[in-house]
Length: 152
Image (cartoon, rainbow, N blue to C red; front, side, top):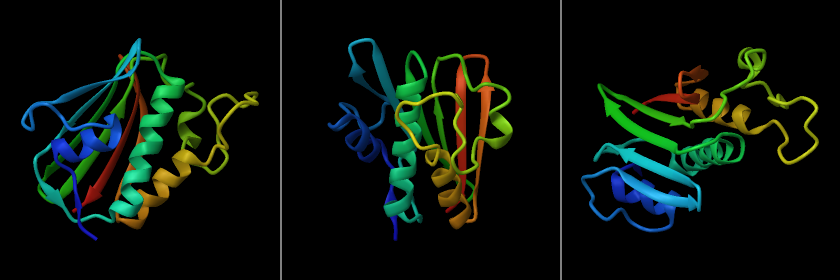
């Protein structure tokens, strides 16, 4: 199935309304003190949107729930590779969590009894693998970052 990942499409999916300028990055208000920035290449890629869109939603949702500051979603396509990257401005992942971040039932806070089953990042990894791609989690100087690379 072909999925379109242009500025208007991602903005409408995640912010609930189209971007004011189709050529510019979109900044949507998520909560009074949080923002979601979407910057997407104006291109069409061949991916199964039925799986990729929920995977993106999982990454954005995790960043909103567990990170701080602005959440950024970027989607670029170059030389047959779609790169989806979600970042936040929080404290990042606990270092001990990173090697098992994509394992089923892995949770960054093992003692956490609240929301989440620890299956979200495993789902993202499964979607990436099913597309012949990869998923990678890391800490940047600004917070957590998850990158999904998919051939397209």
